[in-house]
Amino acid sequence: MFTRLLILLCASTLLLSFNTATAQNLQKHRMIVLTDIEADPDDTQSLIRLLLYSNQIELKGLIATTSCWLRDQIHPESIEKVIGAYKKVRPNLLKHERGYPSADALLKLVKSGKPEYGMQAVGKGSDSEGSDWIIKILEEQDERPLWISVWGGVNTLAQALHTIQNTRSEAEANKLIARLRVYTISDQDDSGIWIRNNFPSLFYIVTPGDHYGSATWTGVNNYVKGINNETISNSWIANNIQQEHGPMGTAYPDVAWGVEGDTPAFLSLIPNGLNNAERPEWGGWGGRYELYKPDFSKTKEGDSIVTIAPETRPIWTNAIDKFSPYIPNEYGRTVKRDKTSFTGYKETLWRWRDDFQNDFAARMDWTIKPFKEANHPPKPVLSHADKLHVKSGEYFHLNARNSTDPDGDNLSYLWFHYPEAGSYKELISISGAENSQGVNILAPDVEKEESAHFILKLTDKGSPALSRYKRVIVTIAPK
Image 1 (cartoon, rainbow, N blue to C red):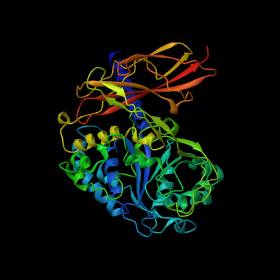
Image 2 (cartoon, helix red, strand yellow):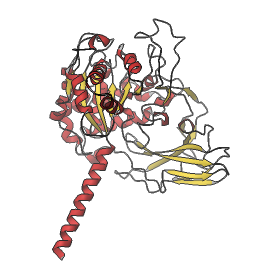
Image 3 (cartoon, rainbow, N blue to C red):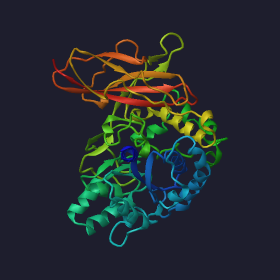
């Protein structure tokens, strides 16, 4: 009897472990990168950052492509060089978090698109190692979406879609296309508009039709007057990323045009408690986007890096946030709202910039330091569900008192309403101190059911200070 009970207990434990591991694995986003590496040093910069998160994002391909800046060359060897630096630091990364893939596994993901520009490389007979690889991964028995993170031209994906369209049944093609999620760093060849016109159901994030001036992603490196821009300064990069940070720091190049312009194409896939990649309108580290058909009727030829063409369908593109930063206060309450507010599309991204820059700096420390000498992100824990239902005029309570930090650091709390993320657009104030573990909030009067997003930003006092989040979605019903 005891033996049978022991066997059942062991089987149950194994099943629980398997289910836990499966659940953790399902939380990872699958991603293929298309990069015009060597067109600008920023692709190398972004690749170095990405590999430090390769235990949290499941990389399925690293494909060298062309772009309007690199029309007839591809450089897969430059991807391999960065992986070579990663190989040297992986043993130390594993001291901090599990799951970092081997360098050999990453090298097998390096593929090549065709060394031709845009639509010149799309059509019958234009298949490449890269386009074939995209199809191969899409056809895997995995129901998770496949993100295509486009740092250069998108013609390798265009060719994969062309092949699918012409070699699969309509039902098969639709099933494969439904798995795709695309984030492009603006249009960098003429195949982007072809994709959007010919595959109207494809999930597509982009700011098309300009010289980057109106692109949300430029918030990653945009100098903003009126805030502290230190974390994108060359001196900060030198001290926190490049110098005395081992092989990955040595491989990180100086800024030539703009630092890490391609990084927003994967920031929203990092599991930080704020990001929800399937809901771009909710906002996150990679910015906030809304689904509509943009009007470029006032854009003139020559104002765009690629040929301008009318959008024929809604796309996920620029959204506007009004942002009032919280700033440190030396005496009394430790934070206060700045009197200056900012409004625009880049604000949806740069509002989180210090957080994700510090996170990157901490992971660079992981490449060289033992666990006890580096900082690790805190673990926010809500004392209630992350979805609440209340009525107008009712108080409700938000609390995260059970939050912890793996390094034993002291924790700072900050609760705030994110109006643009929900349907209720007027700012809802926090009653009392918004930097307490728990806060009380009065539900506003509404005439119809509304949603309101409240964000907890939990920050440790380690060095660099690291933040994680919880998002609480409150449904407010009329009385």
